[in-house]
Length: 41
Image (cartoon, rainbow, N blue to C red; front, top):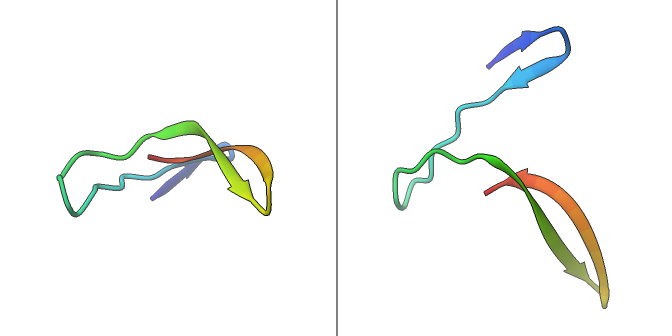
């Protein structure tokens, strides 16, 4: 992991399929409310 001017670079790989994970927008649902978040997928 490196830190350049506040930016972090993370290299995460899916254990099941071996594909690199990338940041993307997803919708989480909790107790009937939806929350748009950006997570690795």
